[in-house]
Image (tube, rainbow, N blue to C red; front, top):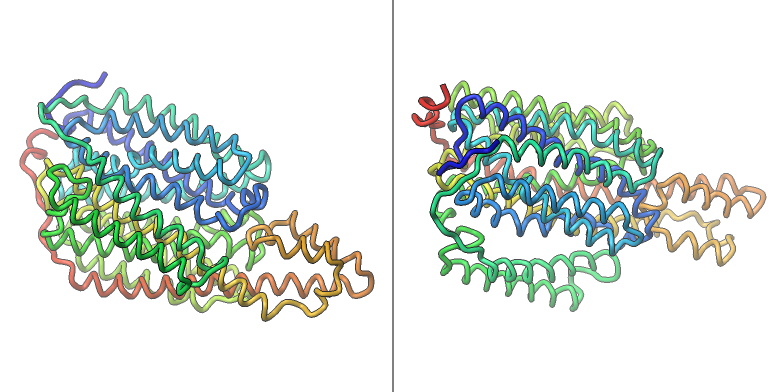
Length: 533
């Protein structure tokens, strides 16, 4: 049973049980994301709503982003335990609602609820590692968390594809429930109850201002590539509105004692540069990983389940990168040279992604994913450890949460931005390569096909329906259908290539940013050395 203490630090034999609980929670949270991502094309096809595709990610990311700093600040005072439990319960409720969703809007609302719970699972594990180990030891154990993330990410896509094909996409949400129950039991019995005597207020006004600033920007981003361009008056007006509100948010936060975003942290050079680095890395990562299943299904031509399996090299290389970087940090107490090597791998990987086309082989795709995965995997523990090393222990939760917030904010921005780029690139290319015989179809058939979105068009069900429409034309129908299918692949490849190009830009910025990252020897805190023996 959890005991009452005045700090979050976990010592003695109990730390290993707590570590196991953290790993289980991390496994559960990361597997959920990969299970769902593989099923998204099928979900969008079933519920109809490609224009809301990005919101399935954005709704989750924005609510988790807003909640992360709140969880981090409160957990430093009231302990990690109650926020772990709250997050797991809310996430499970959101999963149940998502499983029963019968419209895109209901699913988006469910994803937003999931995000509120996921905010705890995103920030608590890294903070709990800090509760157990000193800064020099953390590199190794952050690498272990990377292994957990990688293993769950390998299992997740394959499991998601299998569940979607065999039982229906609803079950990719219901499968979360047993894991949530196990995690709740683990947290209840292993993490300490904390009572410090301090008081902290939640910055609700700041939270509302942050949401009010982000929402108009996200709405504008979802408009781009669908009905409007970046220069359209409506898009510009909502962008300006959002930026003005965010400016007010920053000014407001500077005067708040319990601000949701601690502006004083940015006076620390390591923190400010690492936050920028986290933004760039996350943007580059989202520009590839989020849409790789779509590329593999729609361009390479594999099934939902097969696309999950082909993602395995990416996750295995992520594990290798995180493990090696973590071990070397713990042994040497250094991290900058490792960050430079990781950034170089990421840059090379994204450069190779930009060379891919509809003729790229499976082997080439896997090699490119492996190189990219090593880079991303090695950078993740480095960012966490370097920031935690730069601040006193009592600020562990808040510092870690603010770093995680920057990653989540990048995800919030990346999802609609890359979604808009994909949609615009697909439409422009398809108008160029659409087969001339398409006009010979009946008006009803043309209308049905043109109303389908890219995510729908790559599913076997949609393609079978389109093929039937072409076959009704008689002679030459099969050849025309093949031309149309090739046009879809070319158009999707063109749209995703544009994403990879933007991702490459962020990879370049990542490498430049690492050059300015200060390095301090990793600390060996005496408290841990004495108490953890």
